Amino acid sequence: MFLSLSPMALHGRSAPLTPPRTEAQAVLNRDRMAATDEALLAWAVEGDRLAFDQLSLRHLPRLYQLAHRITGDAAAAEDVAQEAMLRVWQVASSFDPERARFTTWLHRIATNIAIDRTRQAQRIAPPPDESLPAPGPDPEQQAAARQQRGRIAAALQEMPARQRAALALFYDQEMDGAEAAATLSVSTRALEGLLRRARRFLAGRLEG
Image 1 (cartoon, rainbow, N blue to C red):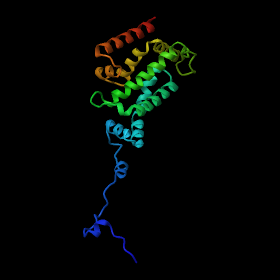
Image 2 (tube, rainbow, N blue to C red):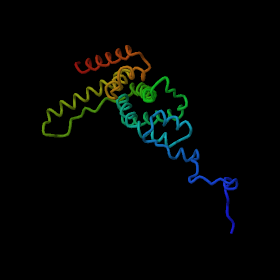
Image 3 (cartoon, rainbow, N blue to C red):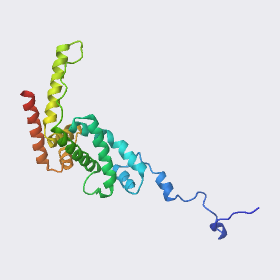
Image 4 (spheres, helix red, strand yellow):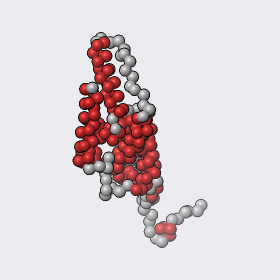
């Protein structure tokens, strides 16, 4: 019977009780659930696909919500959210945590894609469905509510894309003025102007 001796045993030293962790083991043992966005992105740049998957799981729902508010279309919003994460994967190495938070950088990518989609679709978008509502306990109230929703939807479809994006970031995503402005690559004063014009636009359409 032959004994297999390690190099350490040949030199008179006992082998450690547990082998040292290899780089592959370290990657497998990463706590991706607790990691920051910035850490996950850095790991993704190194080729850690599981880290990128965790980023996607963490942010896709909010990206969809943002894109849906800007585009006004569920299918387009899904496409925008997926395209935004694909773009992140493609340009992950360009992210600079010293210049922006990850969420600001990510929302800027998604917002720009959504704005482009909206501008392309605005000229050919069909009017919202304003057909009569289904029967209910208070048909007149339901009809009034449906009509109001239809007017709001129509106004949002006609609103300039950047104004719609400003509303989505500031109200839906609950960003503060500085982060919303950074996402749109404008000053806080310019953001205030976008929000002011968006509110005026809505008021004019709903009062008309």
